[in-house]
Length: 327
Image 1 (spheres, one colour):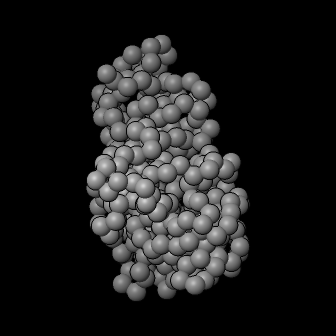
Image 2: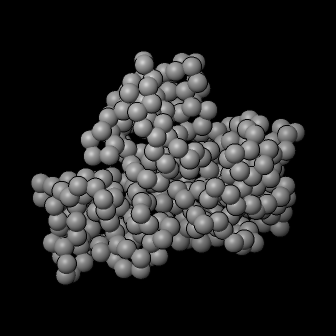
């Protein structure tokens, strides 16, 4: 299944010279991932540009894989919604084939709705998003990198990126090296994070990355093997982390400050179990180093610098903020 850097909420799109306007679909209760479905039965949808979306016989990752729907391709929504594997599933028709594809997981959307133009809409009228709160600023994405000549799949991870196990698999195998391929560990999804430490090892059915995990252990794991097994934890344009009730108030900012009172911790990874780098005192300001947020342990984490310390700090917990916008 495809991890996505995507918007949340419907917004104005211009595609192939045709104007598409935002329309709010009938609300349907979402899966546990907290993202409401946006597709509409009888309407069309489109896979977001870049990574293909899996196409399956039934709405579950254990079902037969009947192909892929390429990035940018359009499909027709037939039925849904179903929830399985913490994924929102829709039955769709694509190039004459009927199957199920995922709309989103806990990290965001993989597809977007295409709403037919309103025939009563004056063509000269300027169209606006349904809600200004949902309007997402334009983002310039870097070109995709395809590490293996015979595998038409791009990498999603750079060296030093932090990765998690993809929701599409339940267990990640870790190998000693790409030559001997001896399994040295198996890690269940959701148990820990990984730092990418080296380039690529191209294999017949995918490509591998060297990883660091579990406080300094090293190994190799597939980033891609038929499906993505490792995906980035940091996502741009995220508006909500599951389990963290408040909205993300400092996403996109270049600086923030700790709320008055207690200090907040800086850690080596976006996890409360990661080694402590130091603390930022209450009321102190700091620099946000990356444009994106990591959702982990039901918290929103940012990579920041305070004085000469660099580490990850959480925006809050539950319905409590620990950080404020620095304005």
